[in-house]
Image (cartoon, rainbow, N blue to C red; front, side, top):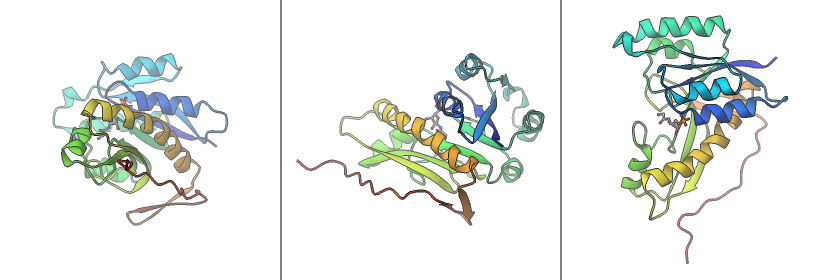
Length: 217
Ligand code: GAR
């Protein structure tokens, strides 16, 4: 039985589109049942509908600081669609600890840095200011702390001397679009087990890849 997935977005939804595309494959262990945005102007809503995936907006703004009230409406939409797993794809709204606890081990997020480095806003700018030579993207289980939680999968890119936040973001985004479907596949097929704060992958082939940056002369 395919796991039933909701994708939560706030914006353009390019990760959402990558997940929808991957899940269209017959042998993918999850199906994208609904896309939910907390902003009705999110470009991803149209993209999802164009792919034949139901997409709804639950505006968070009218709820102001009352996160629990917003989450009650969100939870009933998730119940209605009998959702097993949530994927956050650029969902820019914080959750209460209660909501996160309820979905612990069943809610994934993607962030454009090699966590635990550079959580929060402008991670690519943070990476450039720190002068790191390798950055990337991380898929992790969600915990109450922002951009933290057990790490499922990471992908790396070399940082170039002439990178701007925008050029680095573009290369990391390419990695994100490969990473997120692969991470969802592992979770949906039951290949991930949590040992405390650490994720272990059953049957996953270890990668021997080494990335050295910059490459010497
Ligand atoms: C992605 O780069 C994602 O990693 C990031 O927002 C972008 C959403 O783009 N998420 C975070 O920064 C979470 N803290 P998308 O709407 O095109 O998928």
